[in-house]
Image 1 (cartoon, rainbow, N blue to C red):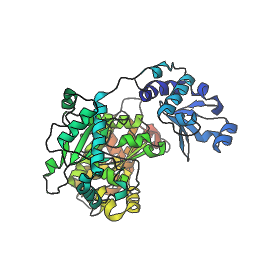
Image 2 (cartoon, one colour):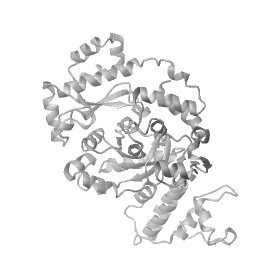
Image 3 (tube, rainbow, N blue to C red):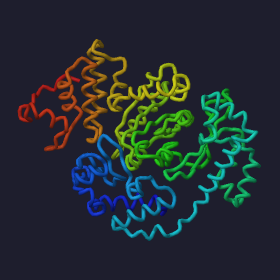
Image 4 (spheres, rainbow, N blue to C red):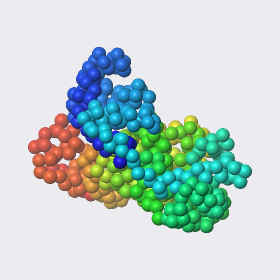
Length: 466
């Protein structure tokens, strides 16, 4: 187990159990969500805020947060306020392990090398050098035509796949044998040379697979992007997430998920961080559980502005709703991209300020999904049509887990207003037909209602006969 895994899987959970002993200067005390500071003198002197504004919430918080301010990683806290890298990170983890009462000796054991990841990293270096060589001029011209500034190409994370014999020679010089090169699959497809490539990395920044894009625009959509054979992208975090994860907590706290891998590079080239790409993979609930565990608090979906993009948005939300935990979910409706097909084209034609304005138009993902059911329906639609569609909305909302109760409530209100009913009557109808609850268990919506109406006097009218 490497230092990062040891920190995430062993040290942080142990630290969360004894934060008051590890950092007594804060005067930590437990609350419903984790820990809150109580030492006014320390927080005012060191942070300039009242103690109750300093919290360390979550099952294994990676640091503390000042409400209305910034977050500080534990590793940075013990490293003089600077996020540590390399050997400094290992030293910080060792110190935190000791604070948490954890034996730090595993940090002193050498981790076996991941030969395949090292090989793919060597391929990445070969591709980046190829892009910046004399042979890469056509690819650089293409990137500039797509709106990536020439000065940003070197550090864009992109490469150009060299001739196969050049790749083979480079890997051989690096000490890799024929069996390793063959097993990696990097030379399995003769269509790769001359294509733009990008490395798809795991949370630790190790390359696990690649995509390769043709420079020609008249290529069939099915072959425009090629992927390394035998690699399971579904088991990886979103494309580009490792860079967001290695940055400051502010960068990864609010993550924007786009659809295409090239969208990511376009946004990054214009100085926009906190972005990752789905890359056309089938999304599973585990993705959102993983993002939540890694400190992502909100995810904003901004997928392509076409029918396929809407379908992908719906599928992604369905999987997120099935997760046991997830960041708060928002959606930028594709209509806000105007005539642009995707975020890549939007930033290229409208600029960074317009893109940031688009993100301000994001809306609750659950309410957006309910609205997709209701597309084409309003208060003037025939009653039968409205009630048919509301039945589908109610069934979908009723299947959501309790953790989405607030989002569910917002969606019911929006659906009622859109269809010409009062939120109260629609809520009663949904409860009667779709929201079956165990005895003695009351939903958050019922708790809110009880402030003005006791359960014993709740009307028996179920509202609209859906």
